[in-house]
Length: 257
Ligand code: GLN
Image (cartoon, rainbow, N blue to C red; front, side, top):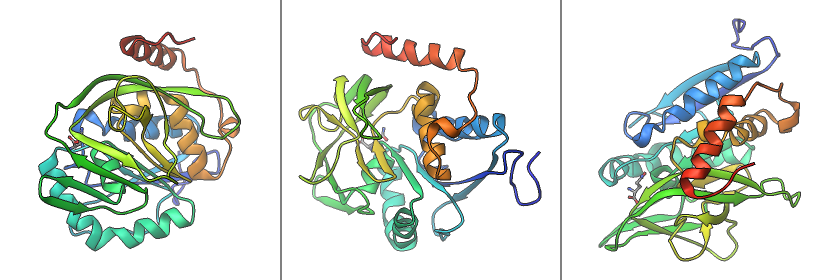
């Protein structure tokens, strides 16, 4: 049991803040939060989940991980202005001190510099140097697999999921992508790149939800948020989780393992 401070038996605690959990939550993106909670509690890591909705402030120092899920355009519009007005400086402060910031799909778009729909240009948080334009062309939909190398060790790992977006995201020249598309569309259906990463800030189009299909990545995020290496986390029996990962990979047309 976590103590009064929320610190678990491991002596550690992960504090997560979900931004607009009622508005940015399509494809059960909330499942990503449940997954983080489970993997922490199985390891005796205290877990605290807070939320910050429309008009609510954001305490940059009170959380190690900030999360924005995906949303329909209209919900995204509702959040965008509030994000700029009440949360942008807090998110920048959190990212600067090394907190993890994870945005999925609509959340990813809002972490960028802008999202343009027709004549309307919505300003983003600007943590990722990307711009998204909603084209009239077909939506980019389907199962997706990408290859990522998060620790620049040369070793590549696989992220699998599902994408459905009308926006096309373009990376500025100095901006790293999260990964390389093996199957699916990725950022814009053309570049072969998916998502974006700057330090501990990550944006991706992968729903699924992302983390239950890629528990190795969930552990990487937990470790980063706690200032650890992934191998320092207690191992778990991931038989079912690995099967889910392989299954999602097969759905995308990629053989896993
Ligand atoms: N509204 C955005 C788009 O369609 C994001 C959708 C989503 O989060 N799935 O591009």
